[in-house]
Image 1 (spheres, rainbow, N blue to C red):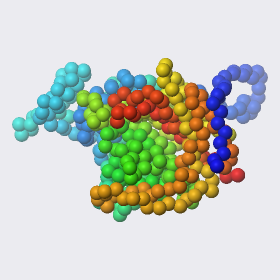
Image 2: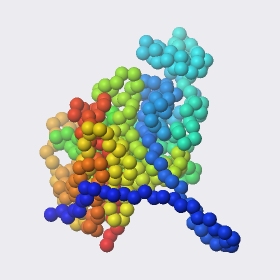
Image 3: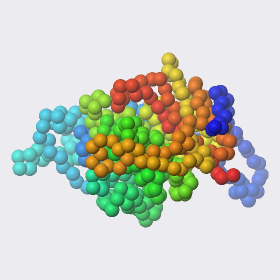
Image 4: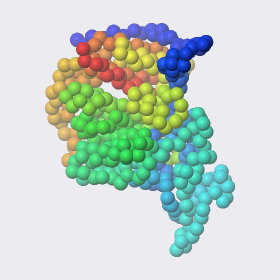
Length: 436
């Protein structure tokens, strides 16, 4: 039986900063005082989306404006195997692209985009990130972060990895297996970070896209801390299928082994849009506004956001907003920003020490085309340790947990969701308990 202590009511306390005036204190004493702790705020952002620089259907400055005017604080446009630097011309040869160009020129002026005709083909030059970011970036209001989706493959497996806040373009590294491709590209991002001193992070994209990445792959990558538990593209199979686990289930499998036998540390979960289509909105289209992260940091600086993320001080969301998250050595607690007529259930999910690590091969799905399938594991992994209904929830650790995380489910149907009965959710990062 799984021991758990869950309190339905959580009485949090606000930290109130107080000022202290020291009169005639010696300089040594003043210097010995710790620096004041800056208050932290929640910043909303998306780290995965696309533009005309690769296979999106909109100009990057129009995309930036959409996010800046829809409640976001930061955005990384992560086009495939390209950074928004240098010179890139696109053709304008159909009505849809012509209409998109007209809207951009109407918004920014007829001379905003450089235009030319080559071999009877009309073209426009895309603005670089440095050329358009100044239109939207405002201190403590909105921030653009350079990014690239390193788009690689192994045989039939599509393997994608985002590099956030990179300085230089990274060419896909290839490899001899799925794990090798992932590792080579992760290492390339981390190597650039070490060489340049610029904070940057890799994250594994949509593991179930093309069924390319299994839980066994996720558990083995070194130096990786982030992956997408929710991706808003309609072709990524977040929920799995009859033969393959959901990405959330893969998360628990990977956590259980990374925190024990493999000693590779936790994985933190992201929710992203992966938007490509900005004109037609429907469940069949990869639209903006489906998934995001909320990062708790003192400043809207890229370095502060990355530091907070690496500390696990953020949550992922497809609609649910959390007022507060408290992750301590004693427990995990949260408070939900409620909406009228909406009910909320928080599930505290984790794996206990001494879990059954055995696994077996499940029934293979038809027409697998030799694609791998995550193995079947014991229900000890990713067990529901407690469940609380209402706006506040708390789980107190017993000490035998390997980690505990939380998933918040609402009864509110998600607007423009990926499937008909999708509800808004949030995912709170795991707290890893030290060994006793």
